[in-house]
Length: 208
Image 1 (cartoon, rainbow, N blue to C red):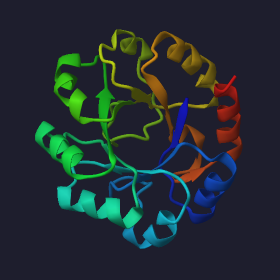
Image 2: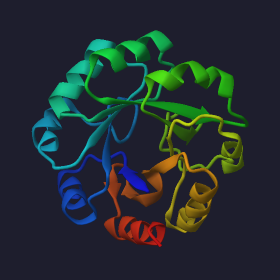
Image 3: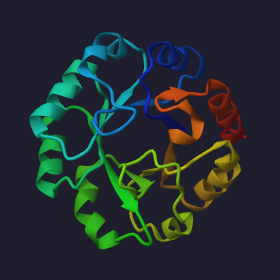
């Protein structure tokens, strides 16, 4: 399964991630209200890291998204706001990056509302609904995913910790569209600073 470590920001921590853990994706948060917000001045060293980078945006202007793609050498955009279908279609048609659409999960999932996006995104990402737009440390009811109706792959997020690895393996056995996991607050020493020992333990447990 793929591993994305999100909310990365500290230089030494990012370099350690790239050399020791080597996840499939590294997530950068471009939402100014987040305690894990990455500023443009960090782009020189971040863009040079040998990892595929995902830029997380929330209701951002399209021009800003394109600027982030170029500045940080992104491989994917993770749309975490209420982006319209028209915007998603245009981004998919006119950029070279993958487009990930976040579905914020509360008590249920509106599959019909998701359906129009299926042809225009590379994957969905299910996260726990929160005012902070991610990084809440809270888990939603994974049982809702048992009814997932699309062939399109998706990522799982929302309060994941080392203790969830076994249950995630079981979930992937039942739902083959589950491509991987998005790890953030459950592996932090402080906002934006990840515990490499915990990440390594999760990676090992997930691969059993």
